[in-house]
Length: 187
Image (tube, rainbow, N blue to C red; front, side, top):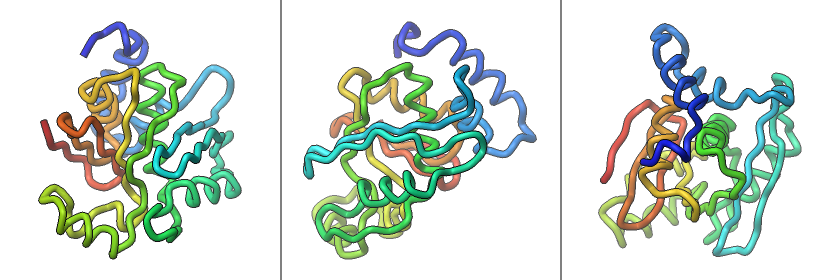
């Protein structure tokens, strides 16, 4: 990972946030989301399979914006079946905080958000790397890619948030981010 792609302030914030052991896990991600222009959270993504994109502020001054979360739910639906569920806002926070740490305005390419049980079972039959009880099934995970950042850079930024699971899939060129237990895997 090259240090010039993550700001010095971001790195110092990582060390400061991780040194507070008693703080709740999501506090790291929330700390990275605070900006100089007020306390707001924004997510930018596109889906190459559907051609859709989203660029929305979903949290302002301590409150999630229901309409924006509804947009995110539809955007992150299972594109194979069209099924929509409520995406856990903490998952969106992890992605937004990671993006902020990477200092990029580029939208994520979302490879997978919510997966219906039928889609997850189909993917499990095709690949050994799909968990039977995947957090994708509950709207708590996303598989993301950035053109301007390497898998290693995205992985390090998401790990720094200490807000959930982070998987590195270098051969497939994406990072899995979720708001489940803090853990890491992959190469």
